[in-house]
Image 1: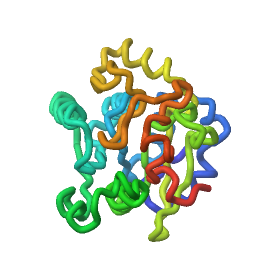
Image 2 (image 1 turned 60 degrees about the vertical axis):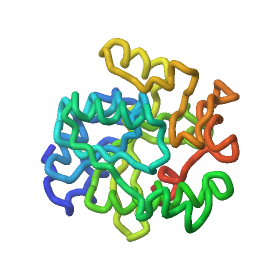
Image 3 (image 1 turned 180 degrees about the vertical axis):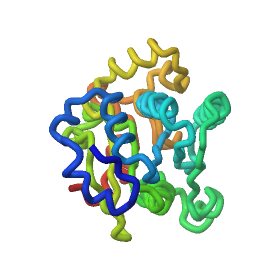
Length: 243
């Protein structure tokens, strides 16, 4: 098949990629297909440095070491998360892009109060969703570490999805681990001697901003420890239009 190297070619993906086949493809086969047919198009990965993201990042860095790694720096992360991010970025020589909100934590709290206590969805909107949507604008391919069994809200996740941003820009969101279980993530982590966030050893299963992250009360729903159970998603994976 011909390799696509222009943005015009992005619209021809249906004709070139066998979606049904790739839904059952391994992460490596899926990545190789995407990277082969869309070489030259701007790509990125969003990574919060949780175990799933590290697996996808490990697979990608071996193929395109310079890929931008977008980290949503909300200002509220665990100190251990920042330490882990910085060490891995140095060890792996990552092209790390710290995506920042328009206001610092101090400015936001001074003007709007402690939103994560009173209006967590608005806090996520200001510190995660809006910064990410702006940061995604230059890219045509977006890789994530999302999995279906992370939460009931992700049970219908596909490995390749088309998303429309609020500006009208469309891009392809690629979720290579969509059908993986948590056990497969940790098997890969162990087999490849990957480091991981120390919070996992304390019982955390889904790790985000420190004020909104707790050890889950439902082990079958890792994200039940987020936002004190008031919601399961911050919005970055639900705000765009999926097709």
